Length: 92
Figure 1 (spheres, rainbow, N blue to C red):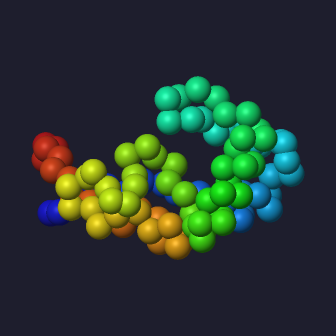
Figure 2 (figure 1 turned 60 degrees about the vertical axis):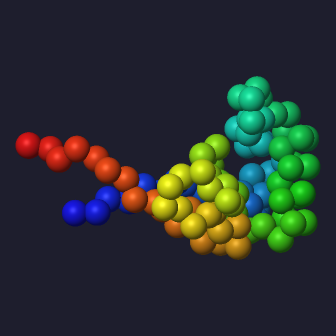
C-alpha cells in the first residue's frame, strides 16, 4: 500500500474575509520562528495576493520547487500541496 503525506494550506482571501484586521493576524511567524506583527502579516498576505497566489503553505516544508522527494511542488493557484510518497513501517 502506497502512503502519501500532504501539508495544509491557507486560502488568503478567505482568511482576510473572515478575520477583521488586526484580530487573528497574530498567528503568523517569520521563517526563523519569531512572531510577526499583525501589520507585517497583513502586508505579507497582500504581497502574496499581488503575486497571484490564492493559497499559501502552512508548513515550512512546502514550496515550489519542493525539497520533498516525489513532490511536484506547491500549487499557489489553489491546489496547495499535491502530496508526496512516504514509507511508513507496517503496523501489527
